[in-house]
Image 1 (tube, helix red, strand yellow):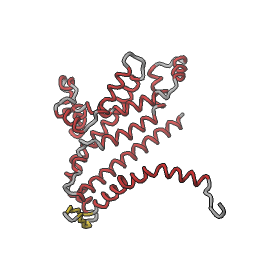
Image 2 (cartoon, rainbow, N blue to C red):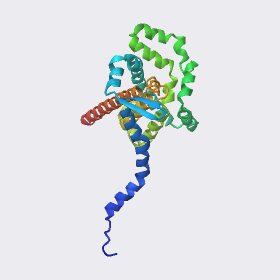
Image 3 (cartoon, rainbow, N blue to C red):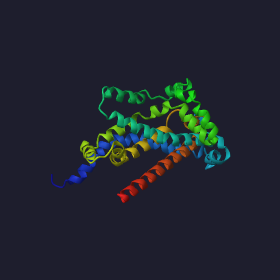
Image 4 (cartoon, helix red, strand yellow):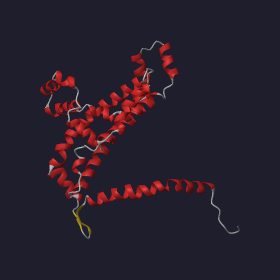
Length: 288
């Protein structure tokens, strides 16, 4: 029709893309962006829930100062031991997942069944279920008590270091509980390596140890990075997390400030992991 402007093909593609992602954008704005922004707003205010609505009064940085400097018990008494324990669990979970994935990639009778067994904790994952499991003393390894390994560690290491190690051993079931998705990712990553590469290595006389260090581990590097990020987020957002239990509805302003401080710590930790990983991969490429 004369006088009607026609849209270009590129513009139509943009509009189609926008139309397809619009449900996600709307959901993100209402269920993620707005709650996040409102929690940041509350962290700078005192919040009172009244029958007539929500009353807020500006507090500035007072909630943050109170948590960080005035009342150390709110954050440091639980956060530092939890951070040490999490940082120790992180390599244990990654190494355990990688080893199990390599084993499950082998051909043996019942391989599908055992793959399902290691993924079952993910299906039944529940903070209350894990808490109940640990409270009944079912999370520890019996041979540790039999040989008094925990006592030996406590006697020979500083208390700040021994306590998280003993805590990990007393709740070793958490390692299995946290490893289901990581095993699946490593298993998928392992299957991306062509069998011809291993065949060529064997023809050249490489033993299994050399094959692991020269072929398998370098090829799994991106998946190790992915699992590190996933594990950090999973550990720090698990429902039994001692910090998350302090974020409650008794004081919305202070709880919001605590949540944002906790978010900042996790964000910095993820940034540190990403930076270290980038340096390691860069140095490996340079040496290659």
